[in-house]
Each structure stands twice: as structure tokens, then as C-alpha cells.
Image (cartoon, rainbow, N blue to C red; front, side):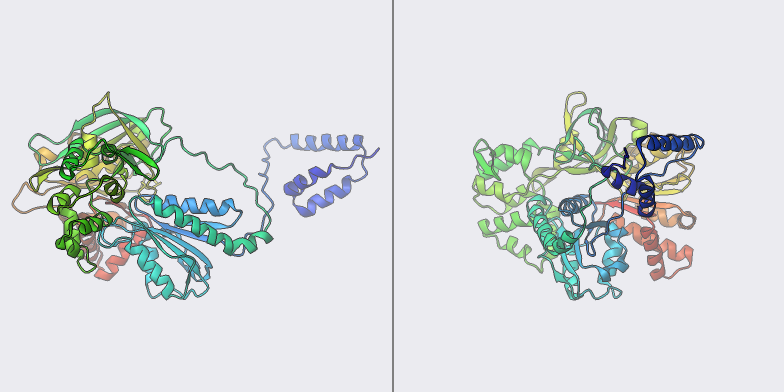
Length: 608
């Protein structure tokens, strides 16, 4: 009785040996009886035993032809929100068996733009109309003379921003217009998302998915179904929408009495959370608004905090909305437009006009919600107020520790916002909340926000320059700890600045100890108010310009963290001067040289 190979084994044999060999093998085995097959199996086992060190090549899946056209998704992000939405869209497309490619803007090969057929760009706007750092090169290419004509392209742009800024979602708007100018056709209209991006983003992503599916469906029907080789990664137990309640282990003021700033060092326990982070990542904090501010706002509007109000299908007392759910410190355009209409204020209407960017910027910088309510009287109903205020969003803080040093903890450096203006005490919502947490008693709802574009170099022999005035020094505390714990041999140079040496030298004893141990090799300090002429970190950079350029020319990585409005541009200007002076380059070439460092991921910024 003959025993032919089982039919169900043939696909496995084909996958293992390839089509020609598998065909030959199966032909040879046809007609053999059971005893012959058993003998052959033993013979093959004996051959394998004679070569014990031979490795078995991994079984590769049979290649499946990719669709001729896939959906390319590009994101540019500063805080991670654009990345999350881009990844969500990619999962939607792939769940339908369609092809999708996902790129961080800095990784996208711009030469492929001319060949794209379906493209989605999800991009945030930073500050007053700037692209995120990881999208600068992409934006310069698309907006520049080298951009190709793309008549065959169908595209969509989703912008993220903050309506507290005059040029809200400017980068998304400019890119959307530029693609049309280059001849492309919109897959769907651009949408602009505010800080509370979910309400707009969800509907837009669903439409983008539907349009992509329509465009790719004919190809999908002609393409073999691909079965995933791996299970999708498990969703972490704790994240932005399911934060972890972290116990406060320490809440310590690290500025001296009499200091102009109250800066806190907080240590939070992540034990049992399953959360992990790397130096450069941020910790998201869900906070509550200051009770004193909630009471002041209710009193000003003469509203009952116990009155139930419904929004988005949820019913809560008004005071609860104002305390836990809504933003009541930062202004935004939709609220101001509504209040201008209710109050009839000419000054507010003028500040909101398109040509009054400076007036609008000044209003946002100097006023909180309560200031506008007091200065421009209006009668609000509770339901209308809850609808007009934007949803509370978590605050992100650079993590000031390395898990290799502190274990299952995360440390934060928090500058407390607390000042008087217009005869009233003002608070920073999150910083006030964190500063009043009690160690051993209170817990804080947190999640980890990865920041892959602000990582230490993989090669520990690389030198590192770190520029972090004020609380911008936080991630560099983590960097120095990490480099010490991993035995990195590269040199570390920190530029730190504050107002006064005696009262505001953050982590002074730690830096001094690191200098002694040679885990920190140089420390350049700038205390702006200790002398008549103010000195900032950019001045110290210029003073050490020859060495700074030598480090960079020698392969060092450069990091900047802190204020995006003044510090970061001033530091960049100082770097241009240094490269021009000590590198013998024109200013144009100096700009290009620094841009090349950015493209090599050797000039990285985490600015806000």
C-alpha cells in the first residue's frame, strides 16, 4: 500500500524549500510505501545529527505582491498627538486588508513625492505658526522650488494646533494650499483640530479611511489576502485615556526662600503600573483646576455650582465641570468669540479680527478666562458656558530621571505659576495642582508620552552638549544619570541658566557631584539677574564658541530644551554665529550646516 504525502503538508513544504525544490521532492516521494518513507525520515534525521552546529534558516512567508498603490501617511509632531492619529489611521486602513505606509516627516524620502498617488499628512503647528522640529525639512521641501508637480496625487491634510495662538494650525493650512498649487487633488477637505483634538479628528479620520478604501478597493480585490505573522502588540494597561494613579513619594521645593520662582522636585511611584520610559520622554499629568479659581469664576458669573449640566451625553454639577473637565486658565479663540458676542465688547471684537494678530497675542499672554469675564461683563447660562469652554487636556512634563538610576519612579521638575494681576491671584492649573500634592497621601493620574525625537545617541562614545535653562534642565538630569549608569565614555557638557545663583541653581549639589565623578565634564552657568548686564545661556555659548564648534565638528550631539518663544530662537542665533565665526562659513552656509545636524538627528530640541 503506497503512502503519498498528505495534501495539507504541501503548502508547508513549498514555503520551507521554495517552489522548484518542493516540486522535485514531492515527485520523488510519490509511490513510496510507509516503510520507505520512515527509512527516509530516519536518514534525514541522521544527516541533521552529523551537523549539530548548523542553524536552521527561519521560515519566511511566501512573498505576496504589494498593491500597486498604497496609502502613504506622513506625520509631524512635537508632543506625539499627530503620531497617535496617524498610527490610528494606518491601523484602520490595514484592518481592511489595504496597503498603508507610515512615515515620520523627517524619515520620509521626499524624492518619492512625485510618484505618490494617495497621501495623508497629519501635522501640528508649534507656537506662532512654526512646523514641529521633525517636519522642518519636509515642509521646506514641499514649500520650496524643488517640489515636483503632482497632478496624479490625491491628498488630505489634518492640522493640529492651539487656538490660543493667532496662527492656529498654520502649517496644515499652508501645506494643504501648496499641494493644490502643485496640481494635486484633495481626497477630502482639510480639518483643523484644537488642543482637544478628538471631536474633530475622529470624524475626519473616518472620512479619510472611507475615501482611501474607495480608492484602493479595486486593487485590494485583485490582491491576495495577507495573514499577519504576529499578533498586534498588546495595548498598555495605562495610557492617556486610562492613566495610572501614581503615589507621590516626594514633593520638595528646590529653590531657596526669597527666590522669585517656586520650583518643585516631585518623585512619583510607577510601581505596578507596567509603564516604562526612556530619558527624553515626558510624563502626562491629568490635573484638577484650583478650587479657589473655580469659586471665583462661579461668583463672578453668579452661577450655581451644584446645578447639573449635560455635555456630550454626560451630566455633572457645574462646579465639577469647571474643576475636573474644562480649561479655565488658558484662553482660546472659540470662547473669546462667544464672549465677545455676549458682552458686545468692541475691544474684544477688534482683537479677534484677522489683521490683529499682535493684539490677540497680547490678550492671550496677559489674560486668563477670569480676567476676560471681569473686564467684559456678560451674562452666561451654565449650559452655554460648559459648551464654550474647551476640554481639559493633560500637561506634559519632561521626565527628570533615568529608570536605570531610580527604578520604578518618575521624577519631575515643576515651576509653579502663581502671580497677581488685575488685582487677582492667578494660577497655573497643573503646576498649582502638583505643588499642593502631599507625599505619602496623594496620588496623581499619569501616563508616559514617548518622545522618540529626543533620545540620547546610541553610541555611548558620542559627546553630548545640553542647553537647558530653568526647568528645561529636567531631561538633562535624566541624560546625565543614564550616561553614568550605562558607563558611556562620551563627554557631557551642560549649559544651565536661571535668575540668581544663590536661590535658583536647580540641582546644584547633583551637578557638583557629577563633575567630581566625571559623569559631567563641563558646566557653563548663566544667572541673568546677579549683575547689571543680564547674561543668558546664549551668551555663554558664544563665549565658549570655539570649543562648542570643536565638539560639534568632532561629532557631538546637541540638545536644547525649554522656552520656544525666546530662548530657543536666541540659542539658534548664537549657534549660527558660532558656526560662522569658528567654522569660517557664511551665515547661509552656517544655517545649512546646522540643518544638516538636525537631519542627522544630532541637533534635537524639545521646546514648548
